[in-house]
Image 1 (tube, rainbow, N blue to C red):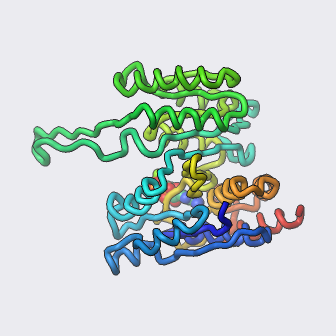
Image 2: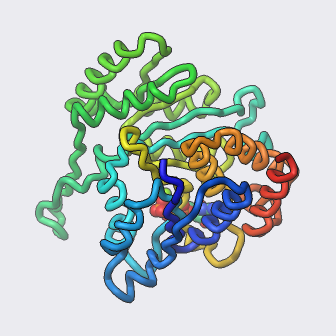
Image 3: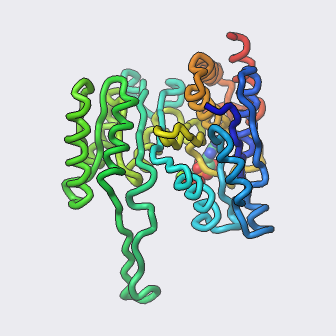
Length: 346
Ligand code: ATP
Ligand code: MG
């Protein structure tokens, strides 16, 4: 695997948290180098009208993966600019897996009352290239009192089968498939058929199925029962915000967009550019750091990845964290505290 990582810090808190991630990986002294594309942002877009050039894409292609901050700016419509960048990368590299782990940061940040049920440690596997968010559909009689707006959900046999197989490939104990096949008929039946076939291919893994409403309820009632939760694009979007909050908040959640066949991956915090706190230096860097841990895992440094996750948890346990986790540190201080903890333990 190529050891150059393209870095796209982006907008808002993106550059603030991406800096902590690259500094931390650099501090480990591994055989990884960064190609920083810090001109891919809303300023460039407003100046030139182009979010990401052909030359940028070429640089990304030459790298072994992407470390991403966040894109989005109140001055530009997110449906144009931000979608442009993320969807371009997603479809260019066919990153059909969105892998979103949720592991409890610390008891103190759990919203759950029962200590026995706080130890969430699961992965939401979200289908990333189909579903409800493709923009298929249209508007009839737009702007009138008779307007009809239609968004169609796209599910393909190959698309559903490959995301289910990926879910099985990362299962430690079990896979739970989530759909709404009792109400969404056509796609629901396809998911059910693909699920039966995927289950038959992996008789060694424990499996279960839940409708998405029941899944939301069960994830709150007892998240410790889940290992891998696999679902479509829109349900995965929603359920992974829920699991992120159960594990310690949106600022701490990590993700990787991945094509398992080519190995190409884009690592990013689950949160967006957070314009409301951008420039204040108080963004939580843990989502970006946990994303860097996923990068380390995929580049053969799982010992370092584990050490980084442990350092994050010890730092949060000591109350050395940003305001969203109840601390008083700045982004840079929180990042430095985690690096000190990481390097102290080797
Ligand atoms: P997107 O459309 O890109 O998903 P969003 O509109 O959902 O973005 P975010 O940018 O993720 O919103 O922010 C949601 C809320 O979470 C905001 O109040 C923001 O301040 C907060 N938040 C996001 N990231 C962080 C972070 N790293 N540290 C602290 N708070 C954060
Ligand atoms: Mg969001």
